[in-house]
Length: 227
Image (cartoon, rainbow, N blue to C red):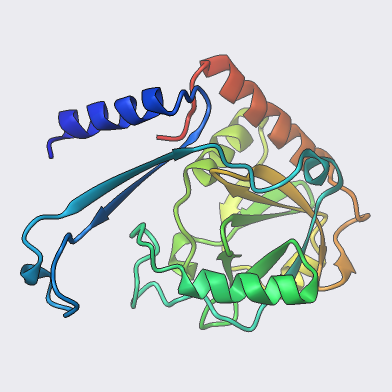
């Protein structure tokens, strides 16, 4: 399937589902074949286009903030499975999500092999300390998310220093503010981690400014910025 054919197939799927604002997921499988592990046994790949609306969190969470809990499940080592590969191997994330559910938390904070923060089950993590924004580097096991990248642009526009650096659980506990980013979550504040209030337990001013600017950007373009 050529890029042009794929584009037309996606557009036709959107038309058939009558979507204006939605979520598109392209799934490419190795195709029909036997149950063995050798992909050469599958001669023709299959393409599945999923078009739907998606909203991870209710609007109340954007006003009041999320609670997160550190889970025992570690993020897969990027040397073993590159997080840049958008695969459907979500077992690692699902196990962490189950831990969050059992703890009554909204999200799970995942650490890497070194014990540093990698990301959450579906979102990138940012903390704010003394007016500066910090986020784990890609080498920590985080996905180079599109919304993550936009936060860097917003920070530069607002004149806020932003740095990629290793972050520990303690850094999250003592942060002034914390927020998560993701395609479906957009930018959402975190107010409690492992039972400890972050800052004053309410979404902070820098987080609020970042969210406001992000929403301005998505409405200024008139089209989704996630491609």
